[in-house]
Image 1 (cartoon, rainbow, N blue to C red):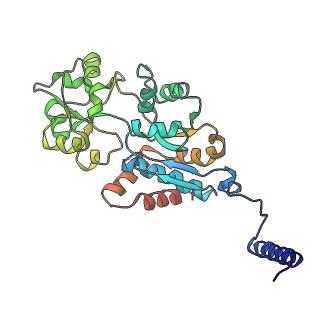
Image 2: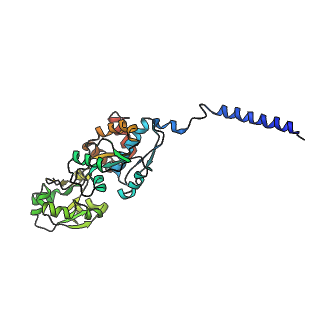
Image 3: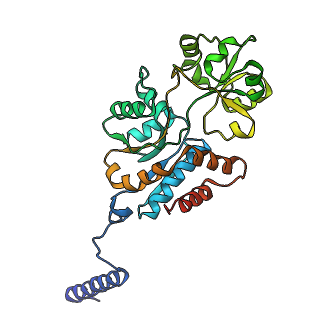
Length: 303
């Protein structure tokens, strides 16, 4: 039977052994924490994306570039539309998100009169909540446009939205459901160009419905590779009905200075041609966003 003294000696020995074991398992300062990693950011950077292949490609470019710079990155892709992900950005659950200047500005300021890329970008910086900011915008855009088939354009001599007023058949505009209420939707067409259209909520099948003739005007994003592959014509917008919508990184303001150099270098090289080419790789070549991003970063010396 142990005496009290023997029990004390045994406990002391056990404690000493535990300390030695812990010391042997540690390769550094036992007070070090994971916050010392992530490129000095202090936290994992959560990169989000819409449920849209082009947006996911850009988000993957951001994520890989940040990882290459030593940051810890978590991906939360394919979240959905703006109403679904903006609360997550607002409360800090998502740190960085590829956005589009014009549409994002309209989200915060429906009455904005900004139209050019420079004016929209400046207005967006003023409209954002205090905890958010944007880094440099790219020349690449993925903005709304009014688009027709080449056959329809040739038949009626269409080059601009204004030319739709001379079309002699009823016009039906196809696009996502929310287009019906947007300032550049049917009401905007009538007020700005005197063009009256019926509206069909075609959603994800907008281009297919345009090619099939179910609608004869469609709201198509300017970086959609099917503008080339399906021989479509984007109508010019001389009155500035549709806001410019350049690719822009939306970021938590506290994080912005830490990642600006990495992300701004991407924006500087993300041209309209580059974005379309990557989208073609996705839709035509069936390459993954990861492979597309890796290739683009390497080709641009950003890996």
